[in-house]
Length: 262
Image (tube, rainbow, N blue to C red; front, side):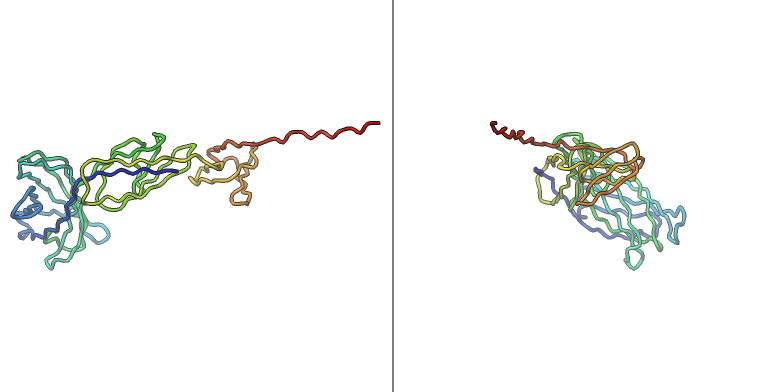
């Protein structure tokens, strides 16, 4: 199995910004990436408690995101840490924004659970990186960090950091590749994985398990597969699918013994 990985990624920023909620009256405004040279102004409205679960309060806050620069703000994901009056983190929310044109405003909302009374926010921001995920052959189902993403080819938004992409396609061996998205790459990029063919028979069970080995026999009542030298029998109703690889056999020519002359 061969793997080709080509990455050209934009720069990501990670900046924390603490701010108090001004007595929970008018909310709080946070400038990003810095107060002296802001590109984005985020205004969190007063946090409203909407319920309780497992002893923690459920809170929401309406958020106004204003692009205060001449540049368009790309799709972004912000991690919002909620703190109490002592600055201790008591909750976390995810704020996702679509692209914001220059000098435009976008509305959003955050929701989180907190073991205490919210009194401040700590903002951690990072841009998402769109990458085109490909496979050879195309049409492979894939997961990113264990989450289903559909079939290749497909553009997926990645965050900065380490990821694992798992590929599956019927008739081919499963494939997996690590992906490291760094903060100092240039725009663009794709990830391509070439899947290898199966070298052994594959038996897929209805509980989701897949076995690689040699199918010894199949009947109307059972399937026998040899895995690591051990024969395993399965009731026919346990088996969802069987994929048999091509076996190349060679036949020795028949040996003819000469008949002695009488």
